Image (cartoon, rainbow, N blue to C red; front, side):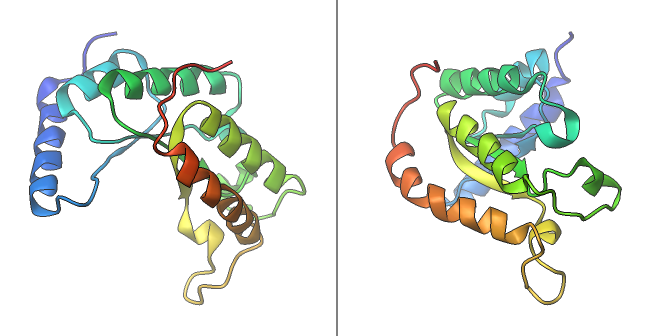
Length: 172
């Protein structure tokens, strides 16, 4: 569990600074895979991101460490005093990674479970992976999972206005 090479994360931190200098009203970020432990600690200490974004696609990769990952990213964001964002798979069908675009009957329920549990852990930013799962390339029409994502976005929009300025103090 050795620290990640400092030069890599320091370089990312320098790019964050340069981006903020060029566009001070925008928030640069790097979406982290769900790697925690020393890797996450080194990233937070050396890159000093203005926002912590991560993904853990529980419907593709398995849910056994899902809540553990939520807690570890929540703690890292709180320690750094930065907002927390999460990226979710737009389709709960794990076969999507191998080209199966079938919409699962419970796709909307699974996506809601991911989004709402993340909100409970202090996530204030929601991102969706990936655009071509939501929109048909070239036409902009929604794919079969697109309406699920659109419905969730519509539901959480009013929640965001309330939750975004709050500070997470605990999860029960």
